[in-house]
Structures are given as C-alpha cells and as structure tokens.
Length: 586
Image (tube, rainbow, N blue to C red; front, side):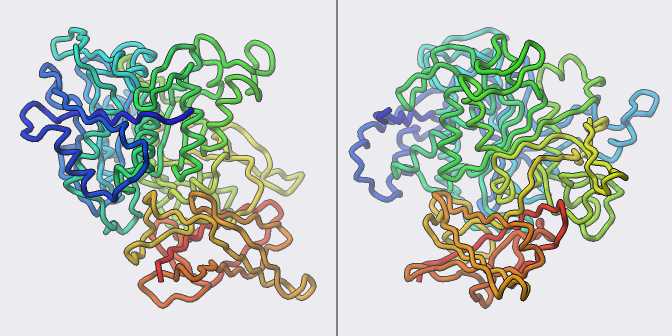
C-alpha cells in the first residue's frame, strides 16, 4: 500500500481559542527540519470548531495531581496517558478506583476489606509518586454505544457521532475522527512545552499510552499516526510513544469496512488493522504489553476467530486466518493472562466499564503491597511486585507484566506469555515443578506470574545520549541500529580462557544474547564497538565495560554502573540481565 495521504486534520481547542488550529500547527512545523519528501503535499491543515454541547471536559487532555485534581504539565517528567473504553452517560474517565468495591468497609460487608484498608483509591497518587505526568484523554461523549460503532470513530470522520450533555445523539455536519483530536491536543501541548531530559529519580524519559478495551485501538492508532508524521519530519521524535499497554483490548474479527482516514486505506476488521500496525510499530521501537482477563479471548466475539484448532468449548489458537493475525500481536507483545475472583463484589455499572484489569494495572505501578516481602534482596514492601511466587524463586530474577516493570525489561520478554500460576515444591524431584493456577482473590499488586521462559538473556538498548544524561531517553531518534556489541565470558580453565559472542542492534537499537547454562558462573563483560562516529556517554569516568543499566538487583534506581555481572548457576535458573548503553557523537 503506497502511502498517499497522512491527513493531518487538526482540531482547534475550544471556541474561545484565538489562534486557529492551522496557525498553531503551522508555527509548530516551521520549527522542524525541512523535509524534501515529495509526499509533503498530503498535509492539509484544517480548522475545526468543537461542539458546544459537550461536557466541559469533553475532548480535552487533562493532567492530574496525586489527588486526582487538575494539574500542570512538567516537561522534565515521563508521560503516561489513559485512553479508557466505552462508558455510560455522565461518566468521567479517571485513575480513581470505585471505593464501593475496593476501599475498606468492614469484614462483615466485604470479605476482602482487610487487604484494601490502606489503599489509596486515587491511583494517580502512585503514578505521581513514580514521577510521571499523569494524563487522561477525555472522549467520553464519543465512547457511548456499541463497541463496533465506537471503534469506527477512531479512524473515520464520517462515522463520528456523539452524545451531548442532554443525552441526545448528535451527528455533526463537520466531523473529525478521534485519532485526529488527540494528535492535535498532544502536539499543541508539546509546541509550548517540549519534553526535556527527566529529573525523575525513578524513571527514564518516556511516553507511555494505556488503552482499555476500545481505548487500546485508539492508543495504537494514535501511535501509528504519530510515527508516520515523525517519519515525514513533521513532528519531533519525543512526540512518539515508546510503550503501549493494551488492557482487555477489543481486537474484534468482526468483518466491517474500517476506513482509516490518515492512511486513505480500508481494513476488514479491527483485528486486521491492529495486527499490521503493532507488528510495524514494534519493529520501529514501540514496546507493547497486554493484560487480558479472558484466556479464551479468541472465542469471545460473536464469531470466533478463524483458524482455531479443536472442538467447540475446547479451542486452541491456530496458525491460520484470524488466529495468525492475533499471533502477530502476541509475538510482538509481552502478555499477562489475568485471573481474579473479586469481581463477585462488582456492581453492574462497574462491570460495564470493563475496568477490573485496568485498575489492577494502574495500581501495579506502586510495586509490591505484600507485607511479607521483607527480604532485602527484593527491596521490601512498596518496591517491586514479583513475577513468580517469592517462596519458590528466591534465586530467580524474573519480573512479570505490570505497570512497574521497566520498559527495557518488557522489551526483553517480547513474545512471552505469562499466566497466573504458582509453582510448589515437589518432594519426588526436589524441584519447584508442581504448577497450579493462581486466582487473585483480593485486589493486590502481586499476580504470581509464571511463564514457559527457559532461557537466560543478556540484552539492552544502545542509544544516542543526546544530552549526556545519566537517564535513558527513549525518543524515536535515539535508536542506534547496526551497532556491534560484544559479550566476553571469562570461563573456567577446563572450558578455555574466554568465550566471545557478538550481536548487532536492530532497528530499535536493541541487542540480545542467549546464554547457555554451561556458561553460568562466568564473569561477563559487555563492550559496545562505537566506531569512529560515537563515543561512550555519561557523567562519570567511562571505560569499555561500564554501562548505563537497569540492574537486575536494583531495577528501580534509574541507573547503576557495574564492571561485570556474575551468572548464578542452577538447573532451572533463568535470568534476564538488562544493560543499556548510551553513546554520544565524537
């Protein structure tokens, strides 16, 4: 498909704005490098007037403080933006837990009360504590009705309608799709407050989207739009998201004509569009994670996915048809199959929101809330949730899918599927190999995630450190591809003196080595061959074996410098060691 048109159709803000949308974006683009691409004629700047009968927050990008109140935007903090799914009338999207369900009442009224009595129901508190700008894209007036109708509004202006504040459905004469709305609001913000290096002690500079239900479709569409615009030189690299969480995503295989305005193309289903886009965006550097409550997701629609294997009621995901499309999504995503039983306490209104997994994900950025996690090796309460049962994996270094898990680690486990299981000790084998399902019976951070991951990796990003920062910058222009990385293992005398492996970074700047168990207990040194163009970057004295990294023992401290890493030996031990290296121009 030849790209002919990326319709940069931009909304003005509210009617009271003095500048038109065209003028605002024209000023913005004028500051960018000149692009000689012949496709520049597809830019069409349009001025829109927003409907006056929306709620006062309708079609806005709101920033929240730790109490869930409106806040300012800090250009030196990483960004998280929530795209919620279908909502009822008079509902406003937020990071607030339903206190009737989760907050402390009494043991007689609520059997999980004891576990939630100390919980802050304003989940924005935890994200603010982690150093983020906490945002919500408000499109609630457009997110009412059937999911199929809502998802069409994401891509196609001619399908847009909304419910006004009087409860009436309105079909405006001049339409715009929801992707265009968000892009305008986001770019208008960045035009006045461009993102800079982070001053957040617990995080790197990143832009993260969280999409729930049909909101996952919107998050992917916006990322697609922004990446196309970035590649044409129209927007700065920091405007592009680098991590997208998809929670209970609505990847329906229902056949429909899905017109995508900015691509001037049509797709046969939401599943088809998302499979194609996620595959492309993952290659370019967007890190995807998914939390899904339905383990039989592929049969959850009116028409089950095509290509399923098995008999009715006992299907498995096949490799053809719709199953092949969904496998593309899974291959580019770290996935958690989420299971919980506390939905027994949900109200009917809350069930309609399909927010249970979303609320868990939002809360998980807090890290562990299990008071039994006191071992200093794990950092104690409030630091990190375990991927696996802490009792069974005292020597393991695996972390599961959660909002807390660092982006580089989520990239490392791309394609890995985590199930909520626990492993118990087997007296016959002397190993923790008895696997049983784990269902979360109270709202908590720990999900006891297990996977079939059986390999040890040493991996990370090599990136351009534009401002010699001690923090990783995930901007789209920092990915350094085709950089040679060398891993040197100092072996025992019986194995020889050293073993050297080499790897080249991919398009997203990521490299990865698989370490065989026979090489465990070897000292490891990583070297990035910078060539003549780049040199090591950092605020300390740098030599070839010191790297900016998320250490496996101190993952929440932003950066740690180590000369070598020692691989522990164990018959079933799997480790993922992430080392990121920032380079600068000579």
